[in-house]
Length: 134
Image (cartoon, rainbow, N blue to C red):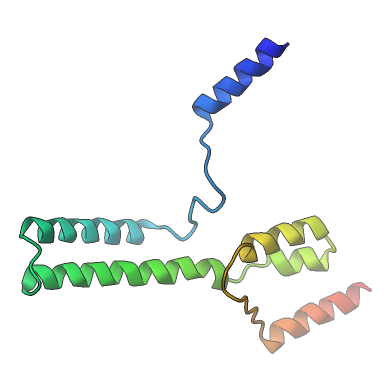
């Protein structure tokens, strides 16, 4: 039996990819891929030209680099700002484990303070739905 367990563990180590939590970014899309490629290409051209501090090659590099970084920041912040129904739905259904799993995926291990924003209409709708279920 030990041999069978060991063979399964060895096969898993060889063929099952192991990634850290949040390794795959849901917000990474084709636009981000193209911006990254363009930024890398302009940076390589800039280096091959001797790293000039002014001129069209430098301007192109700075433009591509800043656009890529801005989109990267904007898209990575979507992880915090995009509203999903999973969190309030699991709370309304009194599904504790699902609620906390969703909560941790949104807010766990963040150094910055968390600001949860919900507008009055959403709050009223959730509150009314909760009251109706009582």
